[in-house]
Image 1 (cartoon, rainbow, N blue to C red):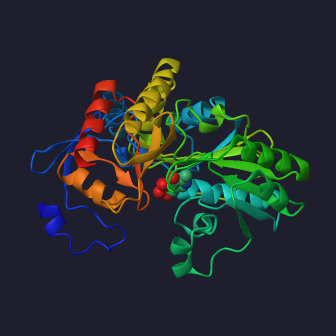
Image 2 (cartoon, rainbow, N blue to C red):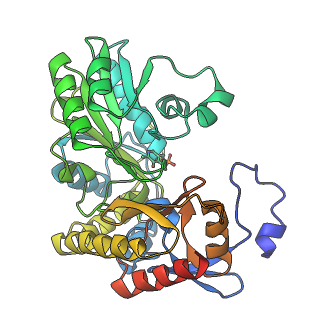
Image 3 (cartoon, rainbow, N blue to C red):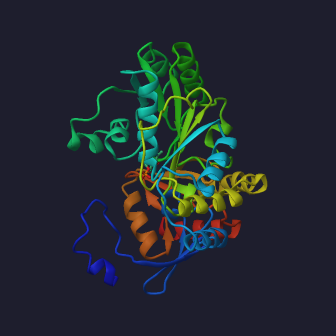
Length: 384
Ligand code: PLP
């Protein structure tokens, strides 16, 4: 066991950590404190999408950190303004609120839609995941995550991810439907286009807002900059975080025109949000990802990965889009997904994660090569 794992006496046990201590990362690879090299097919749960320590991100951060690290949000900085432009112009064209994480981005979205329709309900989907803070947790209808922390924020209406259920739930008192286009934490469950279209039509019917949580699907993960671009629906607002900062903590709520005038000064805020260092990192990430050739490659590599996964023993229901993928293990009494993940991590030097007892998720950096995918699949085969 690594020294850091042995000496970890003062970390509250909110994570069941593996006894591995990572020291260094480059591209698709990580190195632990014993010098072992790993292929990282989790990338910090969809964070290090441009690869670990991408030279453009490192350079942008180094440059900015020597110039200005922080000023209050009472003032402008060029990186923040430029990043807001890139986010809005690449998506919904309205306004941007910066924050520090995915949960915070969803908190901002919930406050925004409630202000737009005071007292309104928020319709959310079963198996959705929107974060661990109280508003985001209240939008995450999963018993094991919510029950210990009751009472939650009122006014959330969870419904199954079907077109009929969404249509029936939305009425004149609905402030918003908040949903992922692919439910990542629940095992990469693709929400059907019929559900998205039903949500769009229902929101239009009653003047509610449709908010897509693109915290995991955004920033190129599915092979387009935003996940919604591969669906028939455009939302009224989206949230992003994870890959946005190339590994540094930044999140954002991006609105279309209609919702861009809802917040007024004092309605919402965050001391660190959109600071110049994280914004400079995110601009560098945009420079890497906002490239049609790279995104086309993500789609092709996703097809290749799913094809290779289908060939593995004990694997069923391979699913995903671009480089956001998962598969289930057959329920044959053999090792479970958490067992396989532990062994893959510790013995085969492959970093992936289990999102459930039978489900393994793969989220490699978007700069992964076909050879690295084949190498990862070979390591999975060795375990399965
Ligand atoms: N929304 C989605 C879709 C997520 O996948 C996550 C994290 O996994 C979150 C929100 C929460 O993001 P964070 O952990 O940055 O608060």
